[in-house]
Each structure stands twice: as structure tokens, then as C-alpha cells.
Length: 301
Image (tube, rainbow, N blue to C red):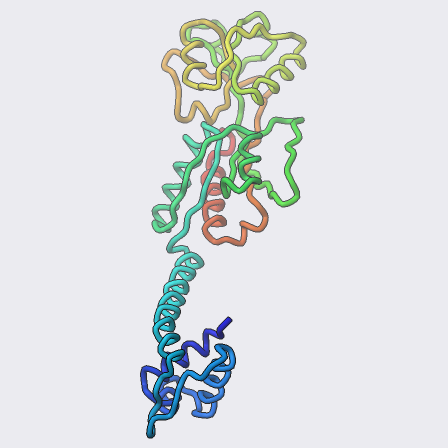
């Protein structure tokens, strides 16, 4: 392994033609240049220069090293510039994995803030429901994961993963606009015990069944789908009612569907998850900060 300082000094000696000229160019003393070149020759195991009158002549080893020295120094300069761009947030790439409604709301708004302040930072978007999204974080497929949990649900998070709570998302009941209970501002779940239901993703369905059990009934689930648009379309046609997070209705609302708050209120917690070590990466920390800013404006959704 060569000391890069010695390579830089060697390159300057070759460029200027003498130890003394290199010393002046680099701000060193001539003995310091001599010592560095002796150390470099010990590293390579052969002389690099021969004396030629008052000047220096490169040996065959010196000629070979000289050709590589320019490439080495150029590569080092490029590497320094790229590292500087990353640490100064002029460049970088962050992979974000989120569930569908977060990818349609929180993520785009955060990316807009990012593009306005740091256009050099690129974001790759992935989509996955929890808990699979958390597994992708641990396996290194993404840098930040957005996931949701419900009260009483324990998220199995490894020690190397940090949870950053973002917001509480209120759950609503979806009713056809002509439904009698659509006239109310809030609806008790028990009042819908006799309805047919459209259930969502597995995690949401588990919570929904728990909520119904707490109210003393088992729901008649007519349809099950992960697609929020399909859920609303089924409700709009009078084929059932559904429970849906308020975040979804921020970007997708069928004109024939009414969303009403649950009484008592029911919410899910939305959090970002990141490997603790990755918090030291400037671009990852920046994207996480933009997500927190956007989520703070949606509290009480």
C-alpha cells in the first residue's frame, strides 16, 4: 500500500524535475521531500529516480509509477468531490418503502420539499404493506420504511432499527351517501352491526375484527380487498360499508361515499423506521426530516 501523500509528492517531483522545485511548489523543505521519496522507494522496493547531472531521471519503475500516479490523484480528487457532494447534500440517493396511502400523500409532499431545497438528492420509491416493508428495511432493500400499527399491536423491531413516530391517522366509517347514518357527524360501530362489510389488508382486517369484538358483534364480511378504490366503489354501489383510514380520503374520495368519524375514536399510528447507523447518512436524515415536517401538518387527519 502506498501513502497517498508520497504519491502526490512524487507526482510533483516528476512535474517540476527536482526535489527543490517540488519543495517550493508544495511548501515543504527539500530534506522532507527527500525523506518522502526514500520512503516511497522502500514501499515499491526499487529506486524511482537516478541522478542525471543536476536533474533527475526516472527509472523504469519510476516511469510506470508516474503513469499510474496521475490516474490515482485524479481518482482521489473525483472521490473527494463526490464525498463532498454527499456530505453537503448536493447529491445522494435514498430508497423509501411505504404502504400505498403514505406513498400517495406523505411521500410526494416530502419529495416536493426535498426537490425545492436539495434538488440533487434522488429518491427511489418502493411500495409494501407492513410487516413485509420492515423486513425489506432490515435486509437492506430500502433506507427508510413507512409503516402503520394499531393500538395493542406490537411491532417486532430489531435493536438496530429505530422507530420515528410521525402521526396519528383517524379511522373513518365509509357509507353510501344515501345511508341513513350518513346524516350523522360520527357513527358508533355497534350501530353498524347488521351491515355487510368490505374488509381491507390483513393488518387492517385484524384490527377491524378486534374493534367489532369489543363492540360485541362479529361482522358479516362480504368482500376483502387491499385496493382502496375498489373498497370505495363497492361501498358506493351499496354492497357494504367499510372502515378506512382518513389519510386515504385525503387523496381518494368517491363522490357517492361519505366518510364519518367513529365514536369512540379509533386511530392507527404511522411511523418511519430507519437503521440507527443510517441516521448518520446526511441524505437519509434529510429525507426523514422532510417526512416529519409533512406529517406534523397532518396531525388529526
